Amino acid sequence: VGPPSRLYKEEGATFMTATLLAHSGAQAPVATPATFVLARGVLVTVRYEDLRAFRIFSERPRTETTGAATLLSLLDAIVERLARVLDDTGDRVSEVSTAIFHRPPGGNFRPLLTGLAQAQSVTALARTSLVSLGRLLSFAALAHDIVDNDDGRTHLASLQRDTQSLTEHTSHQAGHVTFLLDAALGLINIEQNGIIKFFSVVAVVFMPPTLIASIYGMNFDVLPELHWRAGYPMALGMMVVAAILPVLRFKRRGWL
Image (tube, rainbow, N blue to C red; front, side, top):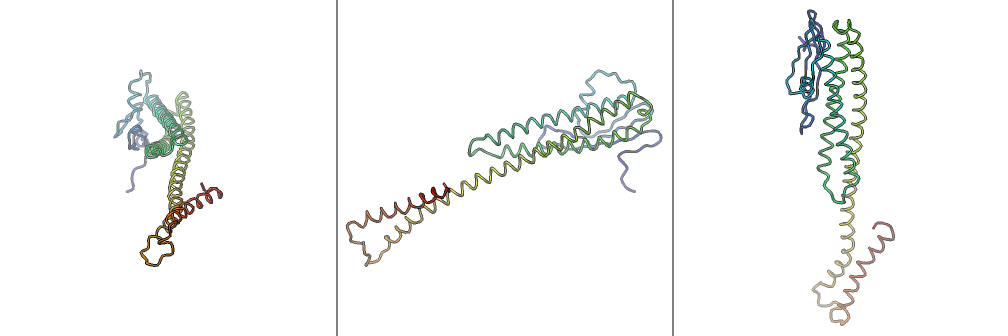
């Protein structure tokens, strides 16, 4: 026997399970199932995590008189909560974007990459929740408690439009986060290339003087400039010239 369907009807009751985002502000947000059972004008919910939308809904003044109205109001609170999470995530992404492109040279990229990773995780889980809610809303349209009520159908259609709009927004936001991740990694590569370039230039600059010093540091009895009075100044001069010439050539080629 396969796993039970997430959306089904049984003995006059409508069973609907959606995957919802939980702990969006934590370091490790999770996706958790929440089940809504609508039967004979009564709504029953089953969940395994503390969902902020449910607490917000419970704190509001109660005006619903039927299970269907309560379901739609609760789903409205869930969609509003997801919209708020996406707005907050978008604000954090904008702050990270500013920090990436206006950071001081040599700044630490680790906090920025960590922030982008969390934003990507929240956005992906929010999209999963919205897609799951979209399926639930489509199935809820088949419930007799909603089909037979004009206000319920109108409210449900509004929720479907909001869910679709937020789903499209998550795609845009995920693309923005991906762009910023690529940009951050590109800037890291540029800085690393600059560091490698600096050490390469330093190595090339000091290589000819080191060669000259090594030659005149050999312990041979017969060395032409060994007893020459001008030998020491000449060796120093050759080392200075050998160090300056590569620098001038690099500048002329635009490498510095």
